[in-house]
Image (cartoon, rainbow, N blue to C red):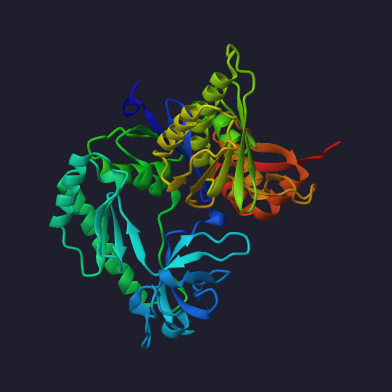
Length: 488
């Protein structure tokens, strides 16, 4: 079956006011997984009016107070010239003026979050703003008009460039046609452009009135953002397990695909979760494992450090291969495709080093490299892949798109003092709430629902989720009794 004919489905699982999960699967195989918890709401894409707290001459960067716990980091190359103050002179070979000559502490500035804060590091910011729409990215400060490099069809590229020439953005504003623009009629493209025009006017007006630091534009939450960014013509069904979210998603999908009236479907069976219904639970759980199994029996082992991720390939029990080189090639080709998939699922960013099984034949090495590059073509993140070295190592660099599911749902284990990880209390409590929510929806649910869980989770639920428990009791007119289960 050709890739174009493969059936893709989107699944959106919601715990109201607490958590949203989005799964993209092709022929029943999970290819992408995203999760957001309300208490760890993402800021990437948000636009803030901030002010310069201090300037670091050595780093040639400014630290911006934009209202977060830690100041954001703004490098000189991310400062738009409209914020330059005073005269400056570029020395020979200089691309940018000295930051201390053109910016001043206390100066107000509009910034957008490019990378989420991580650990002790603040967010990475830019003053070159952008607003993503369904078909276009609206760039403020960069007035280029272009088409995404991921659109390879030359006829479509020519058509989209012609449409772009017919649009008239304001001075200093550019447009980039996204992959979702492919096949869209001119009227739909013009509608998206007008929407982004209006949105920027609203953001600019709010920024003029707001006092720094303050939020002036908030990126969409995960559910509608998934429709905007991930819903393509290849997706044949969108399943949602919350009625309110389903209506929101249906409205967004109707704007993108007005002729597909039955695209969005509601899963309302309290006996089975959405991911259980479509046999996706095991695949999602595997994302959190150190190992990933390959169809032929081989294993991939992922070890992450602060600087890089190492991937080891174990051949496992691949039978019927007398020739070791043939076995090595077969395993490495399968590993290349699975590694590309796992990088997307785990949102592994930064430097990745892959230890392939040794191959003596240079042709085999080139074949594995070609397979890896082809498998990474479907990745939304930018990647750069090296050739396999004489030691059998391949290096690649991948753009980190946001906080991965592993990062936001795990914490250092208190028992092993940080040498391992476990699901954090928030995640465990949310899992318990999902189970309680499901049981309350059953017709056979008693008036007093007794829910057993271990002591630590029970205490967390009663201390941190009491409001949610009370809301569930009122909504379903039931009493919830949390029981402690002590370990022997």
